[in-house]
Image (cartoon, rainbow, N blue to C red):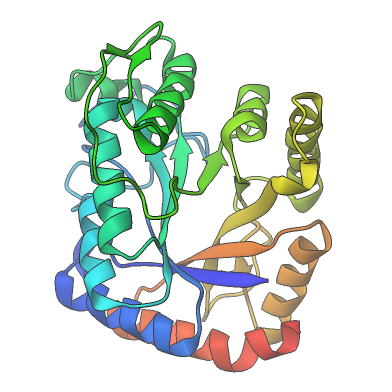
Length: 306
């Protein structure tokens, strides 16, 4: 089992000093990854249903939200070993060739450490605010991944698709490994097919989906992969979850309560095949509590997991 921590990218703790401090400490403690999330803007009025919790986005338009790719470029300069992941980049919010340039740049500057978590998005109002089309966003996301593959693997890439088209172009530098790992988020048959076709990993969210349901989703992705001639074992399973020290276990899929309760929760996920957990640190006390939480987890929880 591998573990990562979400960097202080959002809200009042989002600063270069805090990102550096948590990223450096996480790397020193042996965590495998550091993570960020994606929103370009939060509209004042949102009619779209948030797919988690009570259906409403838990933050408002006043929240500060650093750009995910820019934040990870900064984190790359602060670290040497940890993987740098996005959970998840909403593909439809940006044009694909420009996005691919940012992805390749980050991968090169970090020494090949990027994990590209991707999703199709849920907030129509955000797409409207940035001037990007909302219709067929799943099909557009799939085609963006095809564009990335062409740009990252071909000497003179070109693409002629349903939504995107360009003639032979130069595109350099390429990602260090020739591609970047794709972790696919979502909870629909389309997402499972996307993971089966393009993904190295099916990336789920613990706070809304119990282990038994996530296992079924992952098995669906694996079946689709086998139907396409892929080895189903090539699609791994990862999880994003809250870590709540100083709170009782409220049974919402987060890791909370005592150290032993957190161990029990993680073991339930490990039993269904989760191999990597990206943890959002719940920290009313700010950056100090975030650092204390990842230190406590590393000292008291991880050694019990074998």
